[in-house]
Length: 252
Image (cartoon, rainbow, N blue to C red; front, side, top):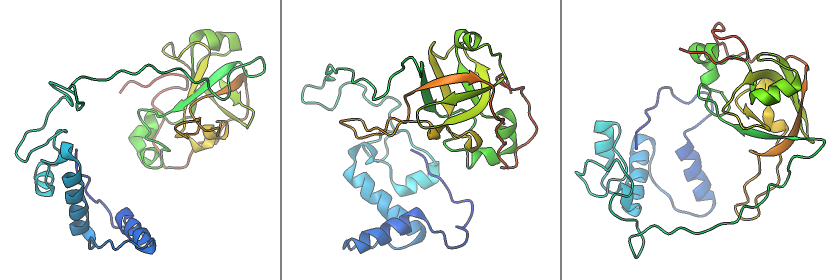
């Protein structure tokens, strides 16, 4: 567990998340009164540690002094455990419970028209939507262009080479971006990070909900890939020069 310190004051009319949450709670009839500023954050954290035994030993003062404390930390003064469950699990028997589960098929699977699986996710250099990391000249120089990672066999079947412009299309839309050869990508799948707004891959994803978790299937849908397309207009976040050619991975 680590503390994040404020670097800038909120611009304009924006406010800290905690202030907004407290106002929402009051509108719902809850008499929340944590104060404002850092004392409010400290009060919320103190409430958390008294309701969550696994962080009970991490006081606000200790977190301020040490910046980070290894979790779990049950008692004040404990150094914290590097392993979550050392001798036993928090069950009546002390043993872990393994439960078999059946695979629930995805709502949309590959077929003749859309033979590949689209997998979306994060990229090492750009966190989530890239709204922060793509403003970093160093990070944006390492990964400046939207890329799709394909297995070498899928890339060859497409008649494409690394760096070529390709178009990925689903039943909901299509985006064009650059091909990257990646033998760690599963054969029959294409991976695209969702951090590039100029190739907004979530335009293609499926909003069908998991029947139990009610989570949208944004990570899996059927697509087809073709060679060519309209080159994406690069984001204007103010990145630096390109250090790696398209279709390759930069080594820094």
